[in-house]
Length: 139
Length: 385
Image 1 (cartoon, each protein chain N blue to C red):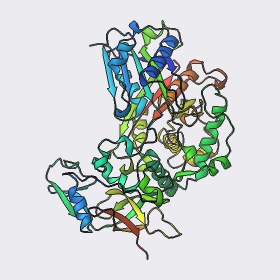
Image 2 (cartoon, one colour; image 1 turned 180 degrees about the vertical axis):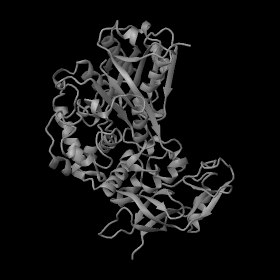
Image 3 (cartoon, rainbow over the protein chains, first blue to last red; image 1 turned 90 degrees about the horizontal axis):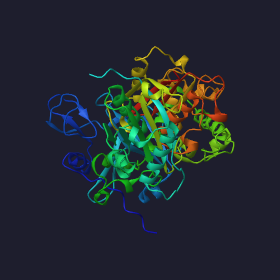
Image 4 (tube, rainbow over the protein chains, first blue to last red; image 1 turned 45 degrees about the horizontal axis):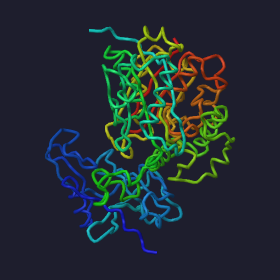
């Protein structure tokens, strides 16, 4: 059985910095050059000061698990052989409330808990796309 | 400047409802509209407003609906595709009547089962990859409401010790109501907590039995002024207070606080505009697109303390003899997805005394209805007089 091709993102002018950074194995989040506020996902304007002067800025890649769910049903064929897998919201250490949706990978039998520390890592989806995901920071 | 009008619900109606009716969105819409007009005792020429909520992939036009029904002239119309499902149609119509912009308004929510579970098929341009905001969700396997629902439930469990059995207790209580509503419910077999816990996970801790039941349906309600309502067929019920609420973040998965999302804002706003209190309310219709949403509304509306909805539900307080009888028609998990409208319809029936064998003892004089969760929501307080 051939594997279903992965569901890829379609980078656009607002988001290409994120995917180009991921290709370099860096996590970059949109940041306002005027007031320094991070926001995700990227928007054309800063929601904090309404500046249009925005760019990507590298972040620590560290955060905590805000919440998670174990997906047990695939809604796209490319996920059928990955079940169950962990979809999570991670709050980054770089700014209170700065969150992104992601996967927690490499989970062991003891799973994951809300509040667990995590760090970014990357999974190649194609020759052009690496996906930023997170793994538990083991004590 | 017209004086502010008190707004009444005078007619309610449903279309044929089923898993696969074979009926078009327009046909369903016409059926529900005609049923509501018959219930109210009004004719198309009496209606001067139409407000529809629909989603772009299942768009229903307000102006076309009016033309289809022979409504000669609209003083007010709105086709909302944003936000909290049927409650948006209701709140737009209330605002229109209260402001004097229209007198008698038909409000509608029509849905087709197809595509109900979401997924990549609904997003245009997917052949080039997940576009726009979807590029930050779909590559992670997050496609549908079930995924953010699992996240919301897990967060509540982690913050407050809520148990899976608490969500199950809500499903069990709703099924008891559904059994008493055989003409509308798709499920009339008793449900036990063990049945709930044996249902498969979709996105753990979310189980199949936490999800509303996708159907083809159209729901219609007719609102009018108090003066006009007094001359119509049914005993009118009245909107006492109403409100919308949103969060700063518009993505379901990224709202600031999953356990206290927009319902807390809408509910606070609604209560600030009335002298009534939660203890005055005898019946509730709380959105159960996923069962946890009703639990968040119980907290937001003040029927129990913050974080306490799990034990509250498990103690039976949403049952007919409980603190706040909730979703007495069986809720959308049983009567199917009416996308917010069934709460307004069932609470209306309980308040005006047309709930038949499901009528609550000592007819309640006030009820509350709610719709949606997360980034946007709406709610309203309805009274019998």
